[in-house]
Length: 245
Image 1 (tube, rainbow, N blue to C red):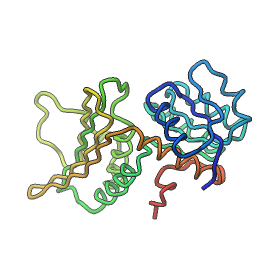
Image 2 (cartoon, helix red, strand yellow):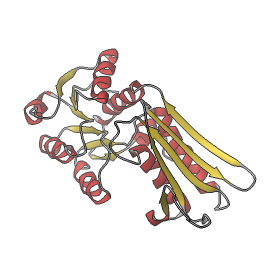
Image 3 (cartoon, helix red, strand yellow):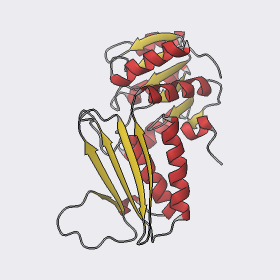
């Protein structure tokens, strides 16, 4: 892998601080550590890749500037509406871009296992997802949960109308075509995700629990080293880790 010069965008946030610490540990040069109000355009000529963990409201501007300066991107922001993300993804594909809802190596193995289970297990196995994060998280479900749900829906050939976000009142019996989603918030939980496939006779649970934001930072910097040598296009951590068939 290369040794790229990094711009950390969103450097004052929790993930930004974790990224700076991980860059020091890995001896990766940081050309600029920026936050809201700082001049990204001025910093871009001295860098090879922008690692953006700022805010979903800033993603569009970050992508536009990276494309204009032909710089690689690693995007970790979440909370975009589906139509907005599709538009931004098409724009980001003009440069080498890794965009992922979660950069943990363990979580990306969870993605691969969930995709396989969704394909193998029939609709006798009811699919549910439970995620929990710290009290300060603003979007729900998490970006990781959204990707897990996409994989379940793809594996079962279902559309987004199959999702059931929590349940309350007299809901009637659960159908075989629905996928339950439950987002919990509290305390300082870094990120827990459990995918459940439950049949009348057995239950399979796939769980990942994050204990330290360092795992996300290390994965994001691994992606930054990987992506600078790639042709323009939109990639994810499955590409970085070689998990795709």
